Image (tube, rainbow, N blue to C red; front, side, top):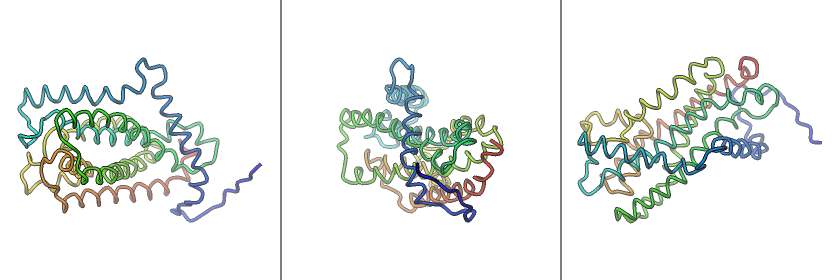
Amino acid sequence: MNEIAIKPRKRLAINIKELFAYHELFFYFAWRDVKVRYKQTAIGISWAVLQPFVQMVVFTLFFNKAAGITSGNSAVPYAIFSFTGLLFWNFFSSALTRASNSLVDNQAVVTKVYFPRLILPLSSTLIGLIDFCFAFVIFVGLLVYFKFPPTWQAVALLIPALLITFIAASGVGMYLAAVNVKYRDVKQAVPFLVQVGLFVTPVIYPVTAIPQKYQWILYLNPMTGVINMMRSSFLHTTPINWPLTWLSIGVAGLSFVVGLIYFKFKEKEFADII
């Protein structure tokens, strides 16, 4: 039997070798959460496809047909415009929500077994990515239906867009997971914040609906850069605003670093106060 010795280390040090040694546990947690989520559901993983599709239909009826909100480009139907935003927003919101609750939801494991705690919030974000993959099939169908052939730029930027979304969700998720250990208000506040975030992120409306001199404020939200980059690449709505997109990428990177530092700073207290 292998013997693992837990030694004190520098407060904020990250043991990459140890994280890699627990990679099987990382994937086990992710797979377990996927099975639990869709266990005893009548249509199973189809929920991952049905939810964004129904959201798209509702948004098109109420915001486009009733309220008159458009994509900002007469050549881009509002249905695929809103679905592009929902695709990435749902990945971010799902990953953030699950990561913020990951420590509390695994309280019994955290108090009894040693393993790198970072595994929990990071593995939780993978569920959102799995849902994204299934919903992306619908997106491809919409591209074909509305005759938007993918460009090389769109294909090349897809993985970076997913990576930025993962980094932003993981960073905020790690911070909230650490706070949630002590203050359960987080579990109540996150769903509310996600709902508010949907409306302050240009999912329903184009960035151009905001006066140009204030658009940089929207790009402080990492998801604004991701969604607008994907719409520009796949739907040719507007040229990519690279300076402001880099601002979103910088904020995503900063949120990851801050979230990671705070998580590591509080990690030693998790088993005692959770």
